Image (cartoon, rainbow, N blue to C red; front, side, top):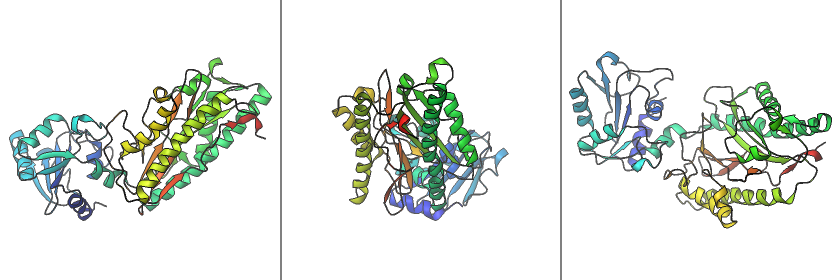
Length: 396
């Protein structure tokens, strides 16, 4: 249900004079969600919805799609000519000092930057200072409710249990057949998801040896994918319940096909685990102390551990991503490497912490999910933290 009062209170809290939501043919997925435009609905003309910090919202719609925003509260202006459109926008924003839009200064955060430069220029020409709506988007698109939190925990039970199942299967196949293809293990996990009524947009990553050192490796089949005794194995999998509004669980763990794990793997894993734990501690400390926390600050804390250990150049991606109805959600990412993530980590949001060290011979990633609840309590989900590389052949 659209909650105008909550949005206007947020505008007051963030000291914004208004929020101008703009979409053209599906160009602004964030605005469309806030405006509750159903998926699959694709208008062919520009529409805008202006929400002032106080007062009545204004809908701006084209004459041939004049009912596009009828489900939202407010007055309606119908335009035909482009001059009428611009006049309507000016009428809304004139007098606004701080006007939120899906915009990122310098495109430092492309996840938020959904409004084209020309539209931003037009709005600025009417005297408004355009500022980023990134934290507003989080409040109304990336925060979870109690039902979604429960759905995440339900999904996490099955994503967590799939690891033990996969390790045991690899051990059995190595003992009885000498090995198993990566794709066969992937199929096993997908069958596990189906049995437990989970869905995913893409099958999991199962990577042996050098493949584990490729963060976005596409699991394959054939001789080069055969997992044998002595191989290092990484499994990264994500899934959500097959129910409306479900949110993802996304976890990564590593194992070694042997009864004991060689020191080279132990050393790298311990560095990655320490970096992961530093990220968790940074989040917990901030919320315990009532300190505002940016996604980029979490990335800094994690990355410093790996850099101090001498492996900074081998950690080539952000620390984590927002998690929602898409595995890569629309909240703050834990990133000060690929983007300038200046959005705050907000209560009611979930994200991954997944540092990695990727060497030519193998790669280690340890991925966990963190949910900050509405009281500021920090939860790590998906079972116990992985504390060591799994010695797969020691499993019964």
